[in-house]
Image (cartoon, rainbow, N blue to C red; front, side, top):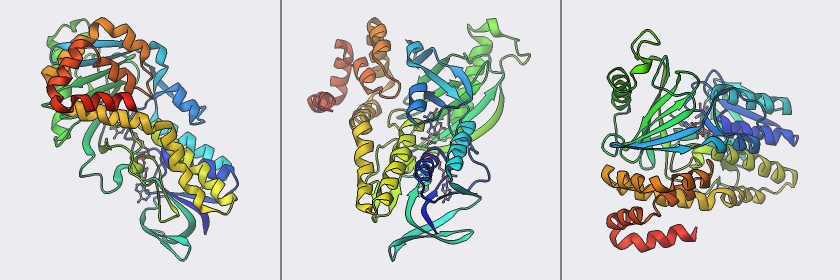
Length: 402
Ligand SMILES: Cc1cc2nc3c(=O)[nH]c(=O)nc-3n(C[C@H](O)[C@H](O)[C@H](O)COP(=O)(O)OP(=O)(O)OC[C@H]3O[C@@H](n4cnc5c(N)ncnc54)[C@H](O)[C@@H]3O)c2cc1C
């Protein structure tokens, strides 16, 4: 019998456990996998500010990001990201570090323990696991995108390969490739993880993620071997062919918060399970991590005051920080889904003259204003008006309001 059981030992669940244990309450983390942080399904792209806000002082740095490029058809724009303090980290090591923080505070952990179901009964949450029945006063549901089974509306299939010996990866540049035919509603990405290595991924509505990622990598290799990038040719001894070290296939959630965050008075949903990943990029280390952290502190308050009604404050606290930003991101996502490649290319071209302004205005963690700024040029607005028609005014009013 624990005060709190956390189902899911990744960033959001571990941060919740760390905060609950820090206040002296008993907490057990159940993780179905055999190792914290593994299998890793993340690019590890995060800002240093975000790590500071999450109280994470130790991480394994892989790359510092100085540029971000966005490409569509024949157009590429490059955004200066030097001042944004964005890095890539070893995500497995990050989760292990937070697990250590939680453990030092007194949290218990059980690996290879799967919660099959849970239900509130007689003033407790009864948890049915492969190690038997367990009981707690409050349950934290931190199962990530596996709820419900990671399919259906709001989920996109994704594939990400960790590659090495890839001359076409710049160690300080994140690359985004938009193509609404190949990756409808999302994009392909390259996140560097050091010299010639990194994570290459694709996601999109209804795609066969494995086929698309193989094609994307073949395209990069072909371009490298036959294109302008010939100065690298032969450097790694395999003519630009990369080595794939790991393949990950996982759903991402792009539809925003799945409220309520507190169910049946005692079940607190955090992280990706609560839809706390960004609707624009599906990045969630910060936003989902903050969900875990805020839930943990609120649960500790509720237990200390013997008043579970306080639990609802967690949802308000998360929405206070991210509510408006996520609303804007969702509006921009719906617009993006309706644009074709040509329209996006026109918008990118219209950004050129203002690229310094866009680079300066963006905040990596709250990037909706930088994205909105991209479409606010005269030509950008013309494109949006043509696509949205009668909804144009409502869209502008909505963006301005939130
Ligand atoms: C391909 C890909 C790349 C990404 N890249 C980035 C990035 O670069 N930057 C970024 O910020 N975000 C990125 N994200 C998103 C980020 O990984 C997630 O937002 C974040 O991991 C969410 O954390 P979480 O704790 O909510 O859930 P998860 O990390 O999904 O963890 C859920 C945990 O619960 C466990 N679990 C599930 N069901 C049970 C059960 N029944 N019993 C016990 N344990 C269970 C799982 O094994 C897992 O450990 C990426 C996501 C994907 C798919």
